[in-house]
Length: 243
Image 1: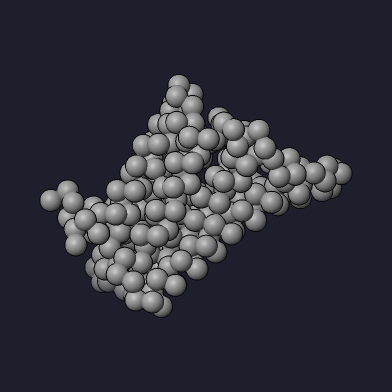
Image 2 (image 1 turned 30 degrees about the vertical axis):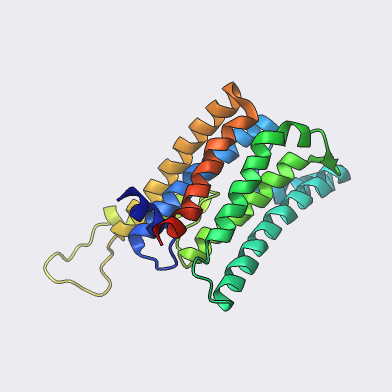
């Protein structure tokens, strides 16, 4: 039963339930990497809004190296998303049986590398950005693009601004007072309870993952990402084991 359940999470045949459960799992991983990664490299590597704003501020203040560093991290995130699109579309074009497995395996391998040699990578930099920060940005882009493609842009896992916005919209609809309670009109305001549940679970998963990731990096260091790499490997290979 567990193997069958895990195989459904990364199977090409998608259901709303499998999208939700995979999204929650990946949101937890993203939260752990973002919060824990900050303790490791001093950067929130999923926060591209902040990166772009920081680059703009630094350019105006004449701090060109930090500005270029922020733009380079943005490029790493973008390239991660592009690589996901390349791999998934290639798998679809060649009618591969498990089209999401390569991306999940690549992310698992990169997290394994991060956990084993992240301390050494941190000593090397591109412009003023450590290789560890670049690697995390790339992984975040890779993962966010994957769940975006899987769920047809319904789910994103590496940042919560949009999730909180959508949650607030649905909460506003839920508490809205529809005056005419006798007849149902097409203009009646109703909350989408599926979205309420989805976004609430994703936000909670990101937060819980952040707590665990921060604790892991504080007490264990880079090696705390190894369980995340193992979990992604299981997700990636479960459909093959099921076969």
